[in-house]
Amino acid sequence: MKTTQRRILRFLHSHRVLIVAITGDHGQPHAAALFYAVDENLRLYVLTDPVTRHGRAMLLEGRVAGTVQRDRQDWRKIQGVQLHGRCWLLKSGARDRAWTQFVRRFPFLNHGNVKLRLALEKTALWAIEPDWMRLINNRLGFGHKQEWTRRRRRAK
Image (cartoon, rainbow, N blue to C red; front, side, top):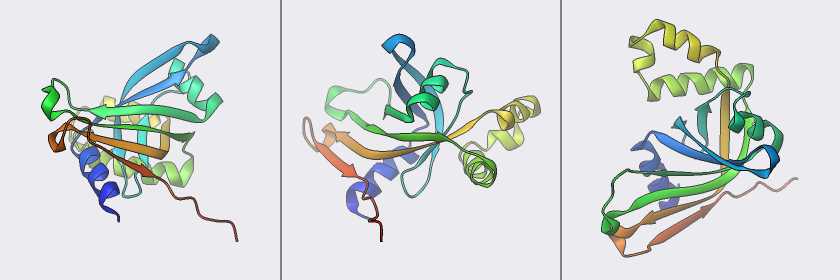
């Protein structure tokens, strides 16, 4: 794994909320805050109902933009990730694997409110596969950025 990808992954593991941005009904911009889990390939998993404004747009467009950052940062210590990529609703086995990862990330789902867990288990689970990410880290200098682009496998 390359250094930039490893740094982005470490950053994403240390945070929990992804702000997803979409273009909604009638071209109106919209954003939503969603808990996420992330895998080693920088694929993020989020729970949201397809009937929400952002869920409908995710189904229709199949693409999102997003950010992850810590709240209340001093400008000299700003850190965050910006991203854009494709998204899709997970089905059957892929959903089961992502749910396992989501529960591992949020263990309170196994030990907390049973009604909440049952409700969330029925909620649509999505994959977001960024094709581009930018890690911003002012701790390394004002405006310091590292970019990562997903390499697509060539068809044989």
